[in-house]
Image 1 (cartoon, rainbow, N blue to C red):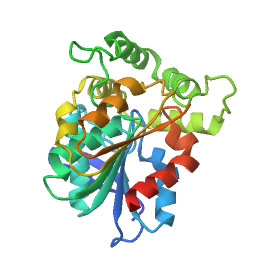
Image 2 (image 1 turned 90 degrees about the vertical axis):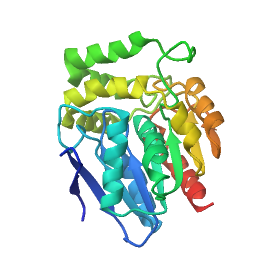
Image 3 (image 1 turned 135 degrees about the horizontal axis):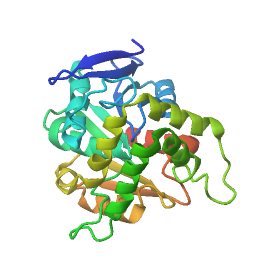
Amino acid sequence: MSGAFVTTKDGVNIFYKDWGPKDAQPIMFHHGWPLSSDDWDAQMLFFLNHGFRVVAHDRRGHGRSSQVSNGHDMDHYAADAFAVAEHLDLRNAVHIGHSTGGGEVARYVAKFGEPAGRVAKAVLVSAVPPIMVKTASNPGGLPMDVFDGFRSAVLANRAQFYLDVPTGPFYGFNRDGAKILPGVIQNWWRQGMIGSAKAHYDGIKAFSETDQTEDLKAISVPTLVLHGNDDQIVPIADSALLSVKLLKNGTLKVYEGYSHGMLTVNADTLNPDLLAFIKA
């Protein structure tokens, strides 16, 4: 089936894709804010061609999933992912999350996946954990006014904001000598605008203020942490470099000069690295 829905315990319809042989090892992909499962096209086709079963879902309020008013927090995100995994009976699965999806993976693996014995490995790519916002216990975080600025931009003119982000910092297209890809910018905008403004507004708090220190400490499966050192959205010093220290079984790989959107614009480098980790 190319696309289908599962209904969560609180009545939310979550859209998912499930491609490839049902008896193959599953890889489940968790997308970033404010995008959809379509952001994983380059990975899903690559791993499908390597014989894997590939699954990706649209987070509640994002993409084609229900535009519900509530539940836009990391606990519901993880529970929704578990609803998909249970529905498809995914076992021995590798969970790969980008950005906010990396936070979703950390919460999912810690609270659902490992306790249920369904997870083999995890990958956090350009991911938000442990916590993005600056607090007394996280002095290297970004100040709250950065996230208040995101909220103001969503309120004021979401369509323009969703053009400015991918045109500029998300893919590093604002760097000197960057090769700008208009189709990638348009696809980011398209994915964002399909989703719900309410989910996206609430999601800013979820991705910036959720402290996932305990999630990371609880994960025991092999976990790969990938980050670009020119990530202008989730700065590496307060994310990947801290996360890998909290993981029991973590490995860090840093990409010189790569952006937050490296999974898309540098898929030719990242996909083989992901494959090597999964097969190791």
